[in-house]
Image 1 (tube, rainbow, N blue to C red):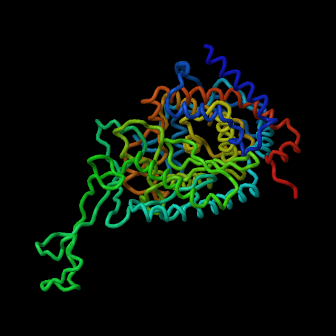
Image 2: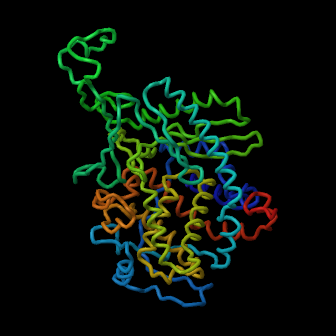
Length: 512
């Protein structure tokens, strides 16, 4: 009880102080001090005990009134009507796929400001300054290029892996492709989960099998390892020795007695490479670079002398194809999952979101509510620490709603209703410990160009972690509840501030 009261006090105090002290949406994470960083590390390791949340409760769909004067809607439509609406689009849920008509969406114990207030909040706080974001992107791209060049030099001396190209997939999120040195290569194996597999209900994953090209011995001494100075009278230099590709058991950075790359070993290798590379180039920069989390590869922070900092990620990934990659997720601590890498489908997800957006009214509110929800989520993390709930989950939840609601329900004046639906959807999904991926196992998702083997795969639960890790579930559920309860106050606090405060803290672009 004392822990709960203390947590409530911290949130309340933060909400009162943050609108005045917050350095801006692009720098919201700068407000996290050392104590909050320690708090985040405790959450990552599962050391903090939280209060058991209340049991799930049912509720009905409601449509808040207030700001809605045009085209009033009735939200008592049947599940079949919602299903028919989804089937009208090119992409739809299929029976046994990702559509779940039993999942309730709508009412919960919270209230949100009207659409006009949300628009003002979005313009002042949630909508990033394009000019400032461009400057930050240019800085990170230039720095990443310099750092990775030094990392390549380190890897050449190391001889285990090679650093290839890099790509900025979103703000502050850079992926780095790596590959083994010759004679090794990597083959990506998508996991075909049997029914009894404990990973059946988790995200799409695969194993990175390390292969080695070996000479096929023919008995001639000229093919021995120390035959460089030997002149063979049977084989000319043009006669190439036959080779075969075999599994590289216990190869570089592989899990013990397997040919599969180990996530933990790759993490340590990548972090050590970053440290050595920074040691080579640090003299050229007037800031500090440090690793935020030991368990997460490439979670870095740049700290300037002025006190400002930029958190960003430099993630080692293995290419699956030109549009998808396998990456390391830090949340699972199970040893038997050390060789299973998560498949990122962000390009296909964004493509589906763009496809669905074409059906919506002009100036649809879907982008607005997603950015507001992400802002509220990150603001709550700055107050009470990191959770396993990510922006990615809000994006997937939004696409579920886009596939089950009429296009007319996304008009600008329904922003408050749709934001409440989105937050409700995430909260109820947390209660059920289930959020189904929007693409996996949905044959009609092929409109995005998703590989057929993924379209035909079994649906996966993005909240599977919460089924296995009770501490992570409690933390994420409490985070979501507090975020929803604080949303109204937080939005009004930001909107009420004079515009010169937003300019001073970087929340609005300068008029110059």
